[in-house]
Structure formats: structure tokens, C-alpha cells
Length: 97
Image (tube, rainbow, N blue to C red; front, top):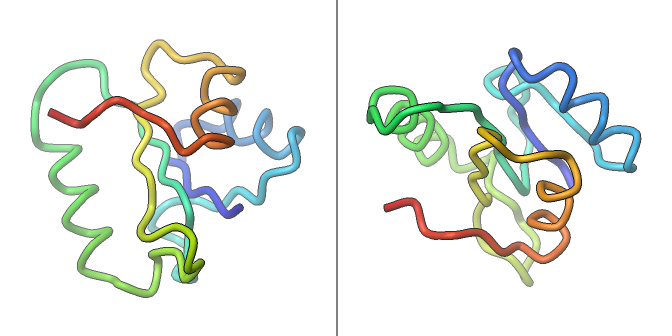
């Protein structure tokens, strides 16, 4: 599984790599990805809207795995590594809105 993370999430990147995930920096990697992890503390639309629109503009970063379509978006705010690992392993997350 290839996971893109915001550059600000360096500690999380290391923890994910220690769990065996392939982790790349969001915006710097243009191959397919299975998940995008970002950090947003409030309900403002700016960062999330920019993230979503840039993701879907570049169709090469979406997973080519026939079992899963697209990349799951995970807000890391108030989530520990174990919960994020659970979300990634099960591809389960609450709706965006």
C-alpha cells in the first residue's frame, strides 16, 4: 500500500514506515497512491478542497488496484498511529461531510 502524507506529518510518516507501509510525500510523488493522510484541525474548506481537487485532477495518483478504486482520504487530526493503521487495513472511515 502506498500512502501519501503531508510534509508536516514527518513523525506519522516514520511510524507508518515502521509498520511496513510505503510512504511518500503528497505533492512530490506522481505514481498511484492508495491513501492520502492530511492534517486539518478545523472545518475550513480551503486545505481539504485544494487537496481533493489536486488529487482528482491528476488521475495517475489514484490506485490501479481493481479491488479498490481511488485513494482514501484520512484526516490525522486527533488520531493515533493505531487508529490510522486500522483505517488503512480495513479501508474504513467516516464520511467527509
